[in-house]
Amino acid sequence: MDEELRSLTERLRREAAASGVPGASEACDRLAATDGTEDLARVLTAPGQPLWARELAAFRLGTAGDRRAFEALVLLLNHRDPPRCASAARALARLRDPRTARAAAALATNELRVAYALQPVRLLVELRAPESVPALITTLRRRLTPHDPYHRVALACVEGLGALADDRAVPVLTEALAHPALAQAAVHALARIPHR
Picture (tube, helix red, strand yellow):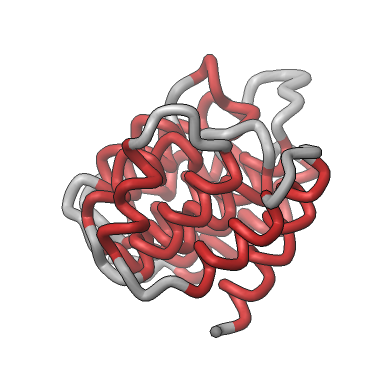
């Protein structure tokens, strides 16, 4: 079992044990150990499955490249619990589903869910898809308003735009220079973008 799956399983085993449902911890272990993708897929569609089971099944299917996990992983990518978002982002990056970048861009730019946009932003950077730069520019521009509380999202956008090194980002990164919390990262990001 690789380290990511081991860490995820330990977290979800604790969650299963805390649920007070008899046998939940053992069920978590069985789900982590099964080699049957059909068993994992059934967990995603069966009614009444606990969230920990759906997350574990979606992660395992996603990292195996099984696109049946896509919808569940996108829902988890936008979850209020940061570890769930992070595990979903890792699985989506490995899934290589062509819908992933569009979904991540929609989540990153949704102002009603901006508190949960950090992992979608990071995923967009990793994917390097056509949607990545426009979505990061849009998200960052909205974060440059006075007293915006989502500094981590803004910083992830600045760093991501630097990593993507696309000159379309120059205007918004230049605006970010005026924000003390972002200025240093914006300088580094701009330095990574080739001059025409």
